[in-house]
Image 1 (cartoon, rainbow, N blue to C red):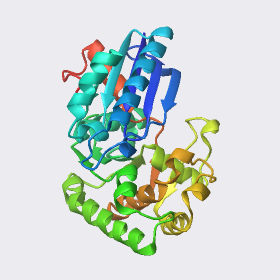
Image 2: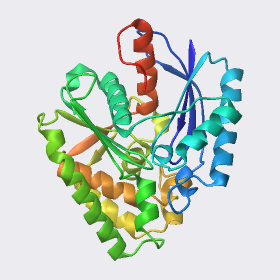
Image 3: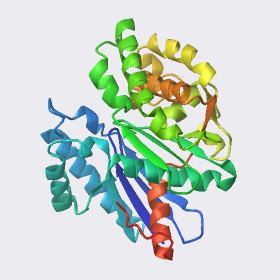
Length: 316
């Protein structure tokens, strides 16, 4: 069967079509990404403005047409932090349902963390032991750790790279004082949850899954995406201070020229690096493996489990 997943995130609207069967690895069949940057289309109280709603409806309607043309038999459509926390998020979702013909489900931050953890667990398998998973999105940071397919603990924090860039930086590049202030804020927030996560035990393996971590690893010398998903990619904690200093001294335009950095993500990469550094340091992990699977794959795997009768919990 061909399943479509539509991910309405803070930065992008991402359509992924996969050929999937119970008991088999989902195989990507088609993908398309629109850099909507919904997080930048919010007004003063974080409501989605009229332009943002119009563009979102257009993106979703286009995704429905593509999925139908490509033979998808079902679509899982979900939204994350930008709509989850927007005061008019429900109204925007109603409009998408009415005008684009698709039912967007809003995932909680904990749902994001749990589904991402499922994808990471399936990728690395049981031999990886107790997994600690980090995922930095545009609006939030997700943390999860556990020894099974459902984590023992799942946490979501408002430490997304786009959110922090928007709220803490005024210059390009930002001033030293702004960088230092954001660093203090991020570290205080992460430190507050370390005990909650680590009380279940130390991780055997730390993994990161997000565009932010992939970009940071690539800038630091990891293999390009063209080398395929099975090449091991690492981001080392010891390299982070020098990498942050390098990014802090560059404008967004200069960062966009670095390997693996998309122009649309260049502005927020420094904030993402500060979050990644804090997470690795405060959780005392020397490095993280970069996982090619994340939230979208987790949703697909959960749906396949339900078709097999493995999971009793409905999709969120």
